[in-house]
Length: 89
Image (cartoon, rainbow, N blue to C red; front, side):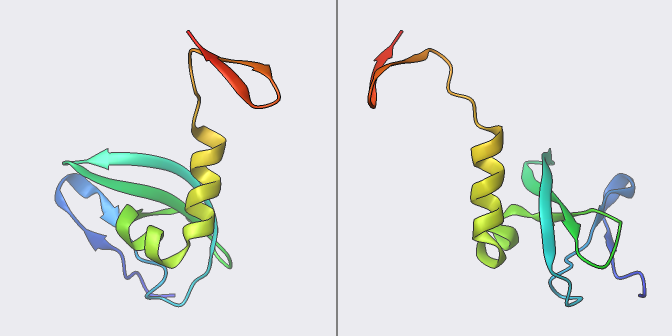
């Protein structure tokens, strides 16, 4: 596959695997670069994860985005009392 990554300043490459016909396998990280958020996405049929703008990922693979946030979101200060009732401390 040809290198279709788009270079930005300071050797930060953005690759939209969707345009290359790849299917996302997993979202492994979230990075903010110059005020823009990017997901680090692993693709099927390639071992190289690449950064994709969050807006693109939100539109193209919303289930993976939801799964990523579910795995990485931590609620601090909430304790479960009983059957869905919470005590916020």
